[in-house]
Image 1 (spheres, rainbow, N blue to C red):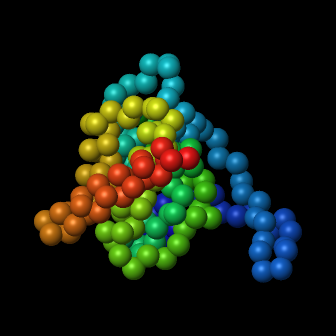
Image 2: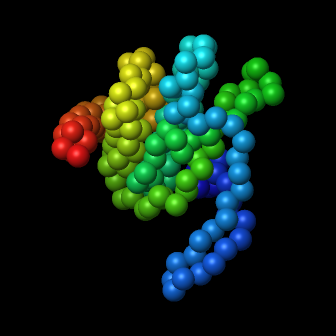
Length: 170
């Protein structure tokens, strides 16, 4: 994760071991989650939300380009740290690095993570503005070729439809 340029807490120490599994103690990261900011009834500036979407998309893109994917990336697992300087972009921290897996397909990795980011608010009835969705996707895709983009959008559409159907069956 560090090689991909993703802020994530580093495990402090193993707390206990059970067979081949360890429970790791992670440091606490101060801040509000991205989900809290989106569902907040307090006035949040549009510029802050746009920056949040852009930075979140960059994180998704960096993870995918590093040959990885996060199987449980959701807005609750992204902490937004307040910046002390106005010109500095938001500092986003991915606080659940346990779901990281290797991925051999950039497109599949992007689809997996963007689907997970989208489905939680949909299931909770939280309307995420289309402009924020577009900014996040554009930021995540970076410089994909036209053929890759077409394939990506076909897969994303199929994945989102499948996720919505599964959510309504539960």
